[in-house]
Image (cartoon, rainbow, N blue to C red; front, side, top):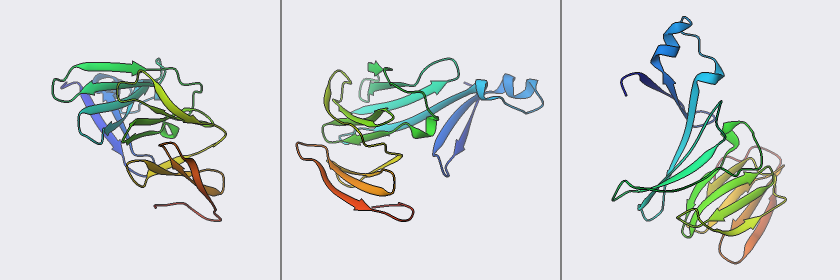
Amino acid sequence: NEQSVLRVSPYPNNVIEMLNLDELTKDSGRVSEDEFFRMKVALSLNGNTLYVINQTSETPATVKAWDISSGMFKAERNDFEFSSAFENFILVPLREGILLKTSRNTLALWNCELSECIRSWTDLYISKVIPISDERVACNARRKVIIVDTTQEGIVSTINLHGNFIAC
């Protein structure tokens, strides 16, 4: 609406923040963390579903799914097992659904309707995920890169790393 302002922080966190304009002007332009609405957005690979993960200071992180053609709300999940910096939440669309980081050390692949966890991988302690195909992702995990095949194979490769993981 006309009372909201979007602020985009593309580097290094790729965060979109929605600020209430009235709250911005009340305190001479200073905004506290409580006034933020943070959001990450992803589109399913087939283009049929829009996924949004959002969080405010008063609500836990929630992933919601909308049907693109009808605009109808499909489902939501907010059962993350950790509260962390918003930038650490992972939302990656893949062939079978959407990949989410659901706890400090767990990645979970959920179906497109967010109604069923198809597969999960634990003990990964990852900080970043980059899709490398519609079924594989590269995960930055404590001085190594783990290649995960999200179909039946699971972890297919681990590469020790002594630097920064940028792209794949």
